[in-house]
Length: 146
Image 1 (cartoon, rainbow, N blue to C red):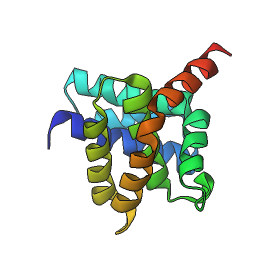
Image 2 (image 1 turned 90 degrees about the vertical axis):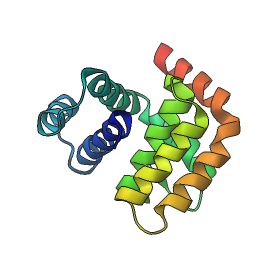
Image 3 (image 1 turned 90 degrees about the horizontal axis):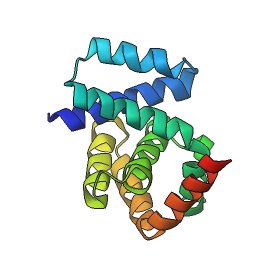
């Protein structure tokens, strides 16, 4: 597995723990990195994903909710919810990952960690959100200015 995919998997595991049991994010990410050493650039990418998702979680969740109205975000599977948040952060906020790559990586994570239907669900929601990329970026920017 390539370093960036391992970094995404590690970030997802950290977000899952933070989301499900509320452990302190800085402790969780450093424990995960100690258990699964990554090259420094990949470790920094994991940190950026975790702390970026946490910082903008409310804005990301609003957009996810708009495009998956039959599944309230708080009732989605924890894995699916965090995969969606990570991919949105990657392609709409951080902007260092091309949209297609972020979606493909999210689908792969859903296959690895989610249920049988997770990959289709993640792909569908993210595909619907691609045209909203600019709106997501603006909403995050406005939230950061508050």
